[in-house]
Amino acid sequence: MNIIEKDRQYLWHPYTQHKTAATPIAISRGKDALLWDEDGKEYIDAIGSWWVNPFGHSNTFVADAIYKQLTTLEHVLFGGFTHQPAVQVAEKLLPMLPSNQKKLFFSDNGSTAVEVAIKVALQYFHNKGEKRTTIISFEDAFHGDTFAAMAASGISLYTQAFEGMFIDVIRIPVPVLGNEQASFDALENAIQSKPCAAFIFEPLVQGAAGMVMYAPESLDQLIEICHRNNVLTIADEVMTGFGKTGKNFACNYLQQEPDMICLSKALTAGTIPMALTTFTQELFDAFYDDDINKALFHGHTFTANPTGCAAALASMKLLEQPEMQANISRVNSKHLAFQEKIKNHPRVVTTRVLGVIFAVQIKSETNESYYGTMRNKLYNFFIDKGVILRPVGNIVYILPPYIITDEQLLKVYATIEEAIEIV
Ligand SMILES: *Cc1c(COP(=O)(O)O)cnc(C)c1O
Image (cartoon, rainbow, N blue to C red; front, side, top):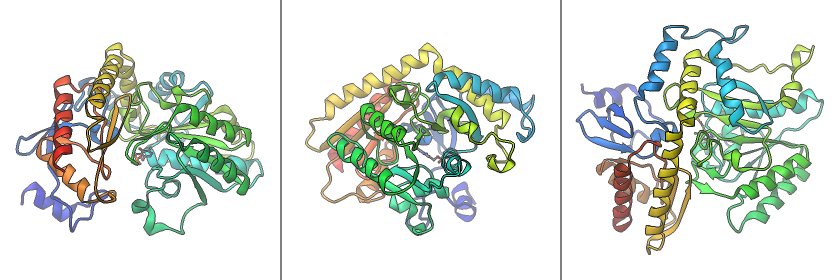
């Protein structure tokens, strides 16, 4: 059996209907923005392998840090123990975050980071003797695939089989241009109608919805409404974190400060699965008590895995290098130039750019579903041309490693232009 036959025999892939799905591509090697399959075909990874990879594949700086940690202390339980790498991550990260963030809780992936934030929000009020059980989120949000994260998400394909089994969630419209007041009003109404514990949002960019963007001023207003009503705010920066929006965090664009921040994806430069939920001192203090029942009884076996921490530390060091910041600006200006070039094309509905994120919505005759015909046609066209892009319906987005070369970017743009003509 070759690898594809063995894969078919043994493996179950994410978000995949195996009966109708195309054969997966077996990747054997990666370097910088490139991947190679078993037959030696080259691909440009124009989406950073699901938004995790800012500094390129097989990055030796991160790999060396991981190796050094693996041969010093690969893992120790975090219940009752601590270690330098965890403390160093905190010392490096906290100065980059909004100034009210004081405490870090480690977990394994974006969904668990969200799960922890929602549990903390609910228990925060429980510990204070107040019953608040409703969460507010955005329509079309995506916060992950565990139960509370799914509940807060709004994409039905991902959640429809579990309807009726979720915690209570009120969804409000996203304050995209022209829709701001409706969003503010819906938030005020939600807070009046139910005992709301927290509002969770993807700050400035909703990734899985197709890189839907909205202004920092609008988010500031929504957070301000929450603060005024003693509703906690959770910024899910799992996608936006670590430079994607042009600043280290999307929250760095805001005047207001969220109470909690969820981080994962690029945290470890796409090497080791790890996540963080960060908190204000006030949140931590609501669990700090002589009564053991007030503690946060949540944990994962690999919490604060030292090797993951070493990867995160190396990753943050790379991010802050002037050359890396220059790469982010370079990709952004290339995106803006490409946007100018194609925005008036008759088949282009809209384009959006923030930081290294670019999105174009292509005109289609039918109402495109998430995994509809146009999406599949586009996806296959890109793969054929050696460019990895995963359109969301009729929205094509680019979120490349920051170190992608100009030449590679130009190839990605040219391939998208070609696709616009033929689909
Ligand atoms: C990807 C993502 C998640 C889920 O992260 P996983 O690591 O896939 O569990 C949560 N929130 C946002 C905004 C994401 O983009």
